Length: 104
Image (tube, rainbow, N blue to C red; front, side):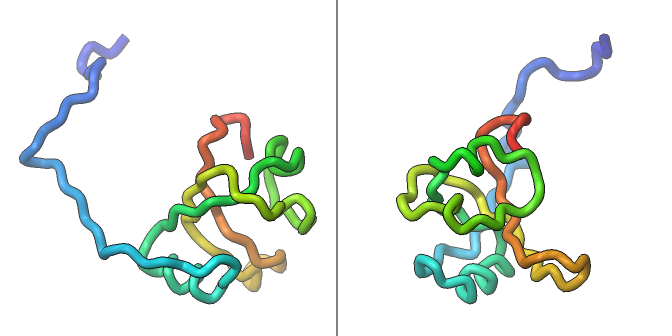
């Protein structure tokens, strides 16, 4: 065991920082606004995570529109967008989820 690795997190006020560029509302189902806002940084979003396709997701792009649902019940962080042009795939959003390491 490496004895130089701290076992607890410590707050060091003089080295801590937070930066914000403000807040912006993105209209529901407006992909143009969402993609433009992602240029500023990650975006918190509410999604419908009740479908089995989403809950049991292991990787790739979810393409079944029925799996997307319509009743937001879960928060995720949208971290990016790929138009698919560089790799011949469909356009997709990258999200960070809180379901643990076995999801995705």
